[in-house]
Image (cartoon, rainbow, N blue to C red; front, top):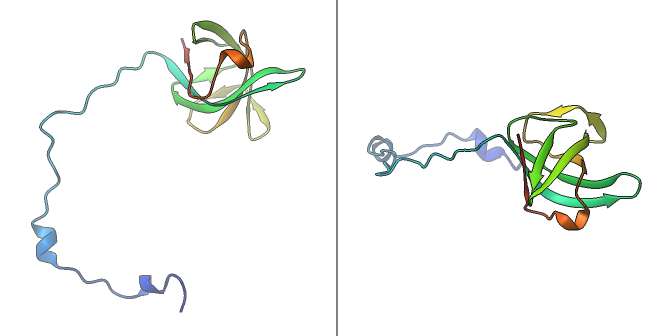
Length: 119
């Protein structure tokens, strides 16, 4: 007997129970979250000798490019390089993990959980 043999058997269920089901209705509409600009969520912070401060994280909204400036913990930072899966790239527009080489901040000035707000 294989692991997925249960998928071959027909599934029967009480149709009356599904006919009476209705999705839950919320009395309050979902809150609208306004995000100004682009946000990068920091998951890891590293210092690499000869390179500088490197942060790994996900882009929450927007697009970032090499040379773009942003603010983290009140400090202005500039993207010197972007890398994904050991390949250098020039811009990011989705939420896959990427590494950013940052100028203007040290490893001790940023931490996991911080967000970089770009213009």
